[in-house]
Length: 92
Image (cartoon, rainbow, N blue to C red):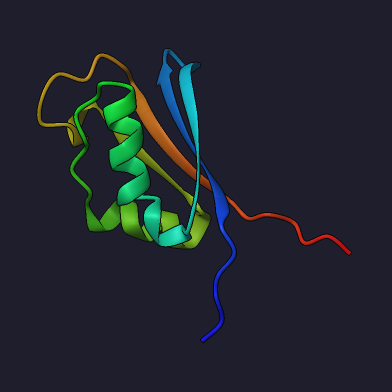
């Protein structure tokens, strides 16, 4: 089994279509909605959103998932939390 290379996973907090805060996590694709999301939410003092099948499908298809206010059980003072996975380009 081949080891996957780590990728960059961006977490963007948006309000009124502007980036309020962002964090970069280096890890595996599988970490985007798991360990990476948990770590970033703790760092930003945010409640972790509810992950739905919709978010998993978006991430698998488009390398991007968006969490809105309705995806948080508690108070979320922003409009969205976006997760975007960016694969490292291989050097020649």
